[in-house]
Length: 560
Image (cartoon, rainbow, N blue to C red; front, side, top):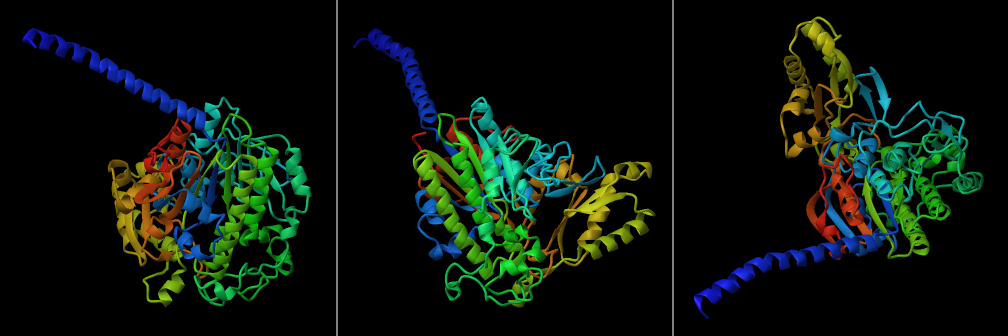
């Protein structure tokens, strides 16, 4: 071959190769997009288990049946090192973060309740007086998602399908339904309890309850759970939890024992009638019953536009708060929840088809073991007296600055200063924040303190400061943030709670299952904001508009 011939062919190769390579790449991308569109599930089911620690999966594993938790883990993808990357770890922020793909710093739900600096009063995360209750004469239905500042995964699915895909959200707690449903839900329902035992909603969603909801409310579906609470299995087999009789558990009103069985009919009136069921596993069964009724009556997953069913099981939280994370009661609640999950999955199989839906299961926060129990076992733990701390801090502020007017509120482990008063007194805000922070750090039970200025000016990437910063909203949060020592809580000496940035409150399960999901597991760290973009990627839809999380690539079926 002559030099001229070689140059000719080499040049031709260089000119043709990029074009050919580009064509192959374009074809591959086209096939990938086509696969996503044609293989999208008919229904996505988001399950949030309130106050579920990750180790409830492993502790109770040998007691679970094959069709609930085990089915999800064995045939799905288990993220074993999944965490909340912000505090406070509580129900409102938890549900908002799961569905928005971001943290309170962005979506604005900084607590279940918080001090509103503009209105100068405490507000509730989902309350809204602009709307009326539907299905009740009380104000329990005056709710909407208006305080959540960004879109949700459910919103994006509705937008993507031109509002044809349905979103139905269900929970015993109003915030467990309102926030997952987003701004565009067709319906969000929650349980009123009290004398009615009915499922209700807000005029934000509809003017009257659908006929099927009225029929469900007037049936004996809930009435049937007014019965004694006995253990599902012989109590002597519950070796994974503490003794049945102990001093670490709370009681129902009118009862002086904390042991099985619980005579709920006898305790009925003293504990709010149907509200009694919230703190028993029957509350989860009531939720599963209603979710299955919604699945059927709303014809979810029955057409070409993907629908979304958001279900939150709240009774696990009520039971954990009352009895603690090491109780026989919490173990029995999870064994019964396992059966309810199996019922729900079975209903999905029957209506939608086992290959046509996708599920994710996670929690809105975890919980601490009862500190009194930990202390009795020589583990550092204890209780923080917030009222005494507030009194002492108020005295310090009065003595140091000559007035208490510079503090507007102390709540949610934060101090809110009155910036106008600070300015009028010609004081430096940064200096006051720092002085108050140093004072708080000297208090017994306090672990660390940060100022709003630190949150504003720094970019933390790990540890407790990173978690606090993700929970700190520039417009809504306070001027000084304080964190109690590990193992310390401000709570009663019975039962468990949550809210801190500590790992016992942040480590929760995350399981993906079904259409578009790989089988497997990972011990790599994943975070709550990763859930929404992972599902959005699988569906081929836009991420929620405040998303800060990233898709968990190992979860997604490589055929997508």
